[in-house]
Length: 285
Image 1 (cartoon, helix red, strand yellow):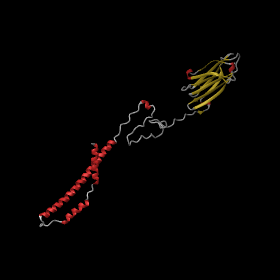
Image 2 (spheres, one colour):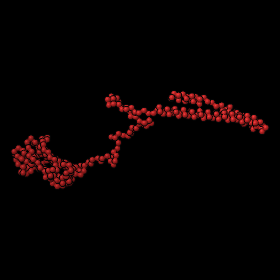
Image 3 (cartoon, helix red, strand yellow):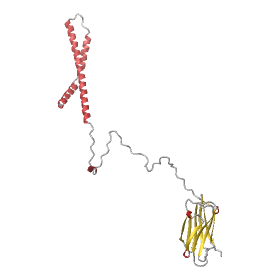
Image 4 (spheres, helix red, strand yellow):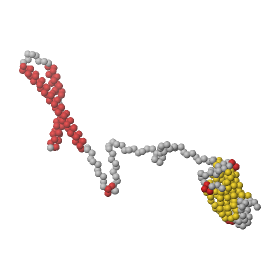
């Protein structure tokens, strides 16, 4: 049945394309009839009948030509519509290929993601990397202020100090004392007592008049000295006033000469710093 329909369409298409109405000939006949003018009244009925018959022929010919033209246009339109329908059916999208089995995915690379025709791919993000982009929100991009540096000032503006041997020392035991007078509240302080002749002395203890929990204390031998060191902890303050730091030790029998003992102090107070070095006065008899 479909082959017969195709054959009919083919023949109709051929007839429509082959039809060439002789428009010039029809126009010449119409003009010739109009130029002849009206017939005289004395013409016989036969003559009028012949004229009317000729006019009917011309009219019928023109009508036939018009019908053929309209029919050919209709056939051509129907054929184009039918071809368009068949073309639309032929280009219908086929369903996506089902995903491969798990075993196939292990060996074959994954197919590219399908996008609708005309949809551009998402452009790559521009701009600096996440790690180089400026912080969002209310964070300030201004760099942190540089740390404040303290100014070296004369020692007398911050403190005064003196070293001595405690009068209660004996022929085999001694106590070296450092007396410190703070003229301003000190926010940093390191006091170091250096007892000469480490090979001949032995540590027996130490103390300070300030709170014990405010200081880190170390005791050890260094460069031939028995060294006691008190360091003020961060966030603590030494108040204005007189304070004492003492180290105790055993020594060989007899009166000990403290001439070789030393002490050093490093202190700071609100942007100011200073250092103090001294020795020990001999023990009085």
